[in-house]
Length: 298
Image 1 (tube, helix red, strand yellow):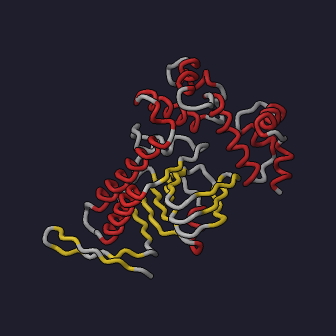
Image 2 (cartoon, rainbow, N blue to C red):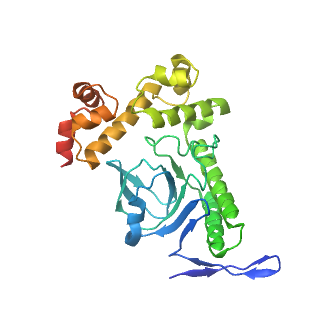
Image 3 (cartoon, one colour):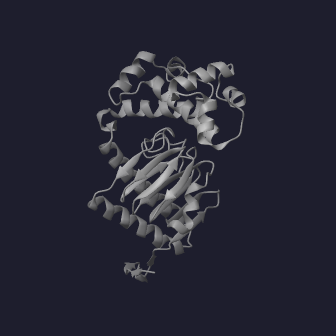
């Protein structure tokens, strides 16, 4: 076990934190604020597979890893960061070393703060997308510093610990957001347009089981369907309707992959009037029927 000692002078007291590869922290605040940080190896990889309501997760890969996310194989390189919502279902196929930061809404609000670094922000606005950030050597140093600050706060027992941890997490989210915007199409959007895209995706996340048309979401946003279509054309080859369909399909695949519910039952759950209309929708998007998809999984 490698331990690195660092010395800091703070208010004339000497603090010597120990930075340990087996570092693990679970913080619970007075109002159910929850923050978990953990060094991940093959021995505790099941931590990443837990689905916790209202939790968001960042995974910082230190070595290459292979995951199955919502039934789809994904490969991640060292020094990539993956952002996950509570809706993603994860299975770890291979992993060497990684770091996990997981927090809930009371700790750092996901709905109440409509800002780019909130959980309605671009890192978490839609579970059908997988925001992936690649770190340069310079950015790696910044994230390493933040990780060490988290470690130093483990033993703080005063009334400022929660505020300090929230400040460090916000800094982490700000850095991640900046990088993701630079590395994706979001830098092509104005601030107002970016907010509108995030709000659209957030509404899709919230209502996809009942609302299936662009017109319905445009009405919620007080915009026209054409405005949304033009906006999305500046940042993606996907149309707003494609985003809606992808979210429905994501949930359909999950239900087929992870549950034994009959197709008829969850076709109504996903907002379809009958099993025939759902089957047509599924086959059009997947290329096979729900029944065949289920058989192929088995």
